[in-house]
Image (cartoon, rainbow, N blue to C red; front, side):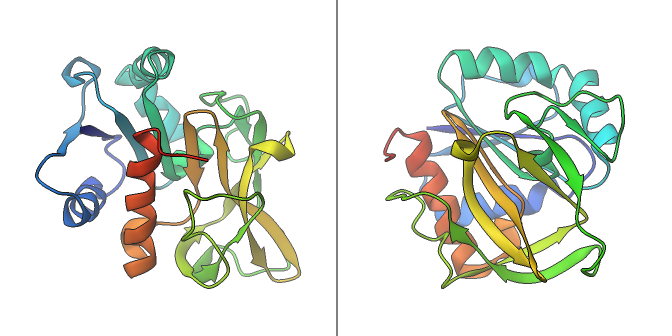
Length: 210
């Protein structure tokens, strides 16, 4: 199995790669891809990111990752977005008016409500919005590490995988649609629960899903 981690040049890509490497056996090939030409028929593509929505989309287009992702998804490859990577799955963002996202999840990225501390930094639980035998780590008994000021607000409820409390508010912290998955938290910084979730992503990408 081949896992390709798309390098946008705007985060510590190696922390994500190392997190996958710690839980995977030698039969898995983990590669960091900084150019679309280096992609070689992966089973799973991972899109991590930190920072501004516009900067992320500009890097995706400059490196032709948008074309790579489109072609790969059409061939059945699974895609997992992390943090900014989840937000980039959307159609647009309040953070970058006029900048189109990947349009893989219908919806807009919104700023978190002002009554909470922004940026939202720290450990929070998640609650499954739908039954899942695959992503059992994503229940309220586990906490994951968040660092963000924006969140993806999907148009269709069926695309929501998990939600997280933010003061008196609740935001969508994970989405799933076909072979596209996104989470707002950082599994690579979330200890044992994060490692379990990464293992579940591998199972999901192998077709062992609900």
